[in-house]
Length: 282
Ligand code: FE
Ligand code: FE
Ligand code: ZN
Image (cartoon, rainbow, N blue to C red; front, side, top):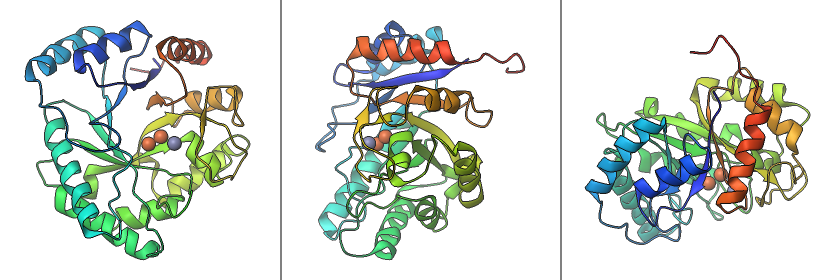
């Protein structure tokens, strides 16, 4: 069965997101842990969480993906901003300990003229401070398009971070199709080769989730503007190949396309219609 969902607004709480997910035919979803521009998270509403967990079980919603505010920069030049990223992420992970089998995705950051090496050491240093043997949530680094001085524009940059993280068994990678295509990985014509490279550099067992987005810009543009499925430079056929690929088809897929709920429902239905059910699956 295709595991697919989209990014949902968390402003009305977890139960509301669960209900929205069911309404649009999703069996997972992504949400921001707090206002994407940063700031304080709302008080944890344990009643809402409990109700959500029951609802999710009843409706087969599994392994939701929390997304850190994209404004956090773990490798900022400014120590105060680095500490803010660390404290926010530590608090997010604490909150997520209430949600069984959730995952947490973040953008590695931008090194802004400090150089890749400095960026990598700040990011891995932060992870070494916030991950503990008790951390239950799998923390994912997102593949980035490489605009400006973004860290994570190549599989090798992500490997450099991961190999410096002591509890790296807690870590995985979220592959964003728009980002990798914009970064110069040709998932349209050379999917097999891209996955081979991912496997050689990072190990495919590290790949835990896929952000399924088309791109408004051409290959290797380093832009990062998401487009609706089938309406961008990646196209529907490449998306269908990705969700059906033997090494990817069991992963959870998350749409972050420019849509409201009805648009997401359409994309989910479209992708489900292109998913080839296999009988050997559990
Ligand atoms: Fe992201
Ligand atoms: Fe993404
Ligand atoms: Zn993006």
